[in-house]
Length: 331
Image (cartoon, rainbow, N blue to C red; front, side, top):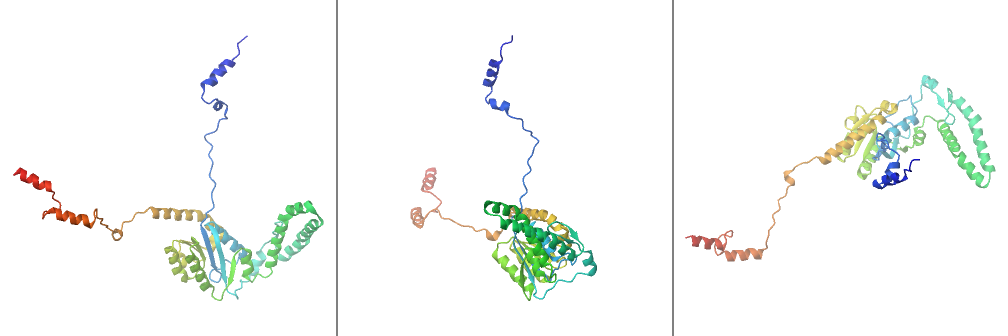
């Protein structure tokens, strides 16, 4: 019969400084955690002159405004989004071929219809009745059951209400204000939209709360404003002004690039180049002769100078009394 090995185990554990290391699971050294990408926090202001820069007529104004907002959020956090519209501005009527090729989407179930009337009949026959039944269930409930049921159906109720607002707003496709407001764009009616845009842009630059200015306009009058933004250190992005103001901006995009999503994809690389340029500018060393000021400081006061003058006895102040004694002894 073999002797027990418990005494060997005790000796082995006593020789190890930290015995718990033997029983820890091995960790793979090849695992690497990828840091989460943070959204840019640069404050952005979007100013849109609808008369000077219109999106393509083949795309609804609401969809164009949403894609413009997505492109702006890729540059930073949108603090202001405003569109300046003339009171008499009307959207161009779609061509018969475009209207025939348009597909109407149900925002509740996702079904597609070729005619808007078919979509309205489908919405009233199915989703309106389901919404009425959900409201009746909530009204007939009491106490905690009512609270739980309302919380469970809140997502469906809000989805129905949003789809109903879109269908109601699309009844008058000639007014752009409703589509812009649904896209969370503040609408300001002005008889001179370009002048109102310039005034608001100057207010934004003077306030100093925005570090990126996105202008949706094709007017050449924006060139002095873009130069002023560059002097103040505010980045500028122009949409729809490829031939005019885009030459003075830091970066410019066309409506086709915004709608296709190319502007949104290019925004991170453009923002990275801006940050690198700012870092290099802060690290750059410059020498200016005019800024150098030479300051002379006196070690003593006027009384000490007078006393030194009296004790010098006609000799220069840099010669000491011992110098005279040494010279006489040498003679």
